[in-house]
Length: 322
Image (cartoon, rainbow, N blue to C red; front, side, top):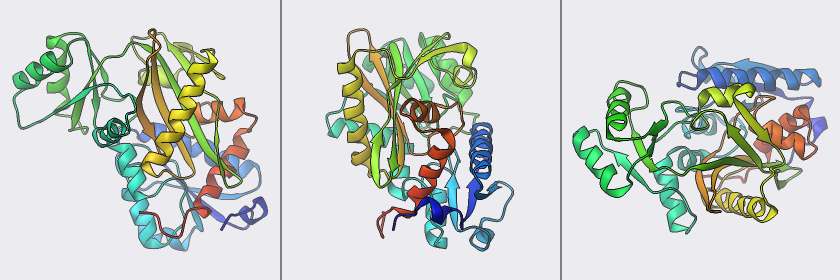
């Protein structure tokens, strides 16, 4: 059942942010901004940090959970499953779509089945030697190659391996980090772009394409959190046929994983015109200066209104979501 703006005024909204993933800092920023926006328009909102709060008590304190969590434990279906079991409405996608969107190898496998372009990849198997991994990458992808966690975001623990020496160092360093499962992708040089989708009054709205020119070698963590390290355009300055194609593909991805309410799909557009899907985010960042808010603003949706739209997605799910 859809929830109107009037209905929201009577709800206790719990903004879940923080957690114990490597993306905790970004999650806290998302939660702080969302919480402030909801309070500023007179709604009853309170933040809760799963890292320090007994989640089994949440149902006594809130009527709906606004998820501003990022990374393992927050985006991968685990918190969604807990909320399903507790009977607490929550924003965004369900357990299955969250898990599919978070685990990049599975997501990319689905893209391949759907004949949607995505960079070629190989998994880093911790059971085989680093030398075997180097040989596999050399023979299948070549160099440079892009290294990233199989489940993670924010460009944390990610980077370009320009040669075998660099790849060895990155794989060995990652073995001691929280992101234990790594993958190596074909390196596609181009313009990073993203497309947001958000449910507005019961219908999924495709937001304007957002493109970025990072000053670093790639759109890294620092570039994503410091406006001085990037130049961005929203709406994108790329040709209309290119942006139309990305919007079309973003909607296909939305349906492919069974997403609900909100989604952000990331692309790379090469100089050749190739458009390739990198990943998707079922819980995109909610910061006021983040990509989702920027795209919403470009489409005429103010930030506080966007947060209210996101809250309403908790009440528009089908009765059963896998």
